[in-house]
Length: 458
Image 1 (cartoon, one colour):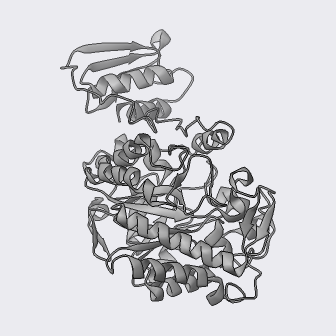
Image 2 (tube, rainbow, N blue to C red):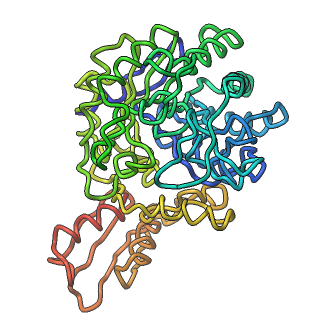
Image 3 (tube, rainbow, N blue to C red):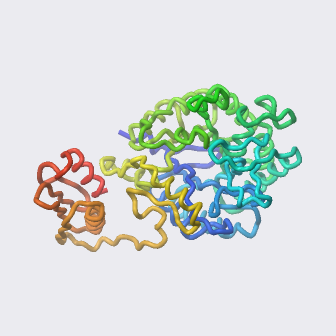
């Protein structure tokens, strides 16, 4: 039914085993100096092992002068960091997945305390209305320096063994700020028309291509629509302008487009809370795919394979998600093996974003997931051994802890029975199936009880 999701895709010679992409997601797992950590390596490898054909890192800063997004995001600004990145690449390659590095600069959406002069930068000195942090305009000479920073980071990604590099031109960060008429008010070679607004991206693509290999894929992640009209601002990138930019990128040598949406001032349209429907922005990716001859990756609150199939059947080459594969890294394997009913869906509760924001106060607080307690802890948790051998186990209490205990016991091979107080409902699992033994769950509906049972068996 979902075989099309597992067809291979080629991006400038890079053979990806299927159409599933783990999209970039800030996680606060890197070392304080920006080196890739063991936690990074284990985290990304788990997404490759779970069935994603292409894994893309979180934001990787291109300089430390004014380019850090947080105290623990990746930073590839010098050759001495290459060994740690290479170890991370090796871990992902062992899973059979391809691995891309996303390089970025936050612009006015950064952290002033991490800047050498306490000032953020942007094309025209415009502050983020969300952060309200002091921001100055980049001079033309500084813009050329930023271009060189991106190119150098792209070259180091190639030298580290990454299969591709992705330029982060989305979500209101610096390259997106140059592209957007909302934030770029320059009248020099880097602003004033769509072509000049995009000149920074053109120079970066050209520089990376000249200093790496002809078949090293360069991806561009683009905001298809900033949705600024939703917050009363009649400006910014909209789909027609995004399509114009994508045609430019293709003509300049970009090998694929990764379509997203929103910025910090329209954050809900970039990292959607529960009120947004699954698949709500699919039209953006489909529209861009119709206009290009290179592969297009698109995300759209993908939680279930039907939504992914809708994107592929609409012309999108690859389907991406960050939070869903954070919640369930085995999503791809489950769908491929005919067990889509066992998917543990992301519930869009925003706990991941909440914990990421808390990490700004405490850099030793990593990002976590409400429904996946293993997320981000892959390097410290032992692999689950199948040592149950069909023995029976009973878990009393169907709260979150009880459900997780039952799930792990089932994975270990125990014939597991989960009992809620008063005999209101009980569920029994083998390591491969979940089935309700009685009626409704106390305080809930049979449907809810069934969904919890399916989740726990996954």
